[in-house]
Length: 296
Ligand SMILES: Nc1nc2c(ncn2[C@@H]2O[C@H](COP(=O)(O)OP(=O)(O)OP(=O)(O)O)[C@@H](O)[C@H]2O)c(=O)[nH]1
Ligand SMILES: [Mg+2]
Image 1 (cartoon, rainbow, N blue to C red):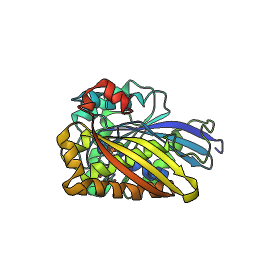
Image 2 (image 1 turned 180 degrees about the horizontal axis):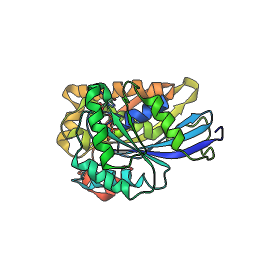
Image 3 (image 1 turned 90 degrees about the vertical axis):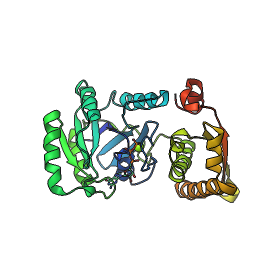
Image 4 (image 1 turned 120 degrees about the vertical axis):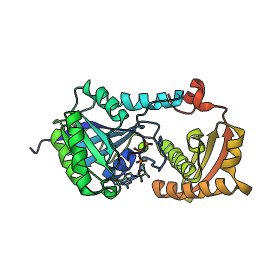
């Protein structure tokens, strides 16, 4: 039983159920951005959990939904493609929702794959315990889950049990990544995501969905322990640019200072952050523009 175990584990489910919150909770570090708005995650985010006798490699993924746009289709494809060549799938749903049409669609997709699936019923902090059993029962009649684990990714409730269950389902295997590595995402990408998180947190309606962030400059001034970062916040229309900048630049200033604090914690250095807003007309509807912004 002491042999080394390892494997790739995809976390999938509808938007906003708490997939990224779970990844951060398991790693004990924030590498995936989160928000109370759906469709926050747009890429496959790899997170590595090293244990004494195991290495667990998680994929956080965009929420699976019925896409209404080219970009939505891209995100769903990223999520579904993350289920290829894994050892285990964690399907996450919410404790305070009943079974939806989308769940049946996801389960049909999963039924065609040869991998074990754990159902995670998240946000149990929001429901009464007695409401949980009927939900577990209903899900277990729909699909042959290897396990069903109620959790709260936010409070940490059930996470130890989940980790135990994951370990028992993983094969014996090698250590794929160095043990001090927690992600393969470049620092620049995580920084751009932290800025996008603060844009999402400070804007409303369609703006969070119309924003992409790229890093134009990332310069380390070693002697001064200072990192100079120039970021571009891309929006789809001129009117959105005005909203992001805000009255006398107040919104952009707030986004910048919120993001800078997070980035300084993450990089462990002082950061000089400059954010510029650029109109990249209808980028989310255009294949070439999507590519240019890193959504391949
Ligand atoms: N009450 C409660 N809220 C939670 C829990 N887990 C996540 N949340 C909240 O749910 C919202 C969505 O969380 P995310 O982690 O961004 O969800 P996601 O599934 O990654 O969403 P997408 O990336 O959009 O697919 C955030 O406001 C979280 O704080 C939980 O266990 N309990
Ligand atoms: Mg997410």
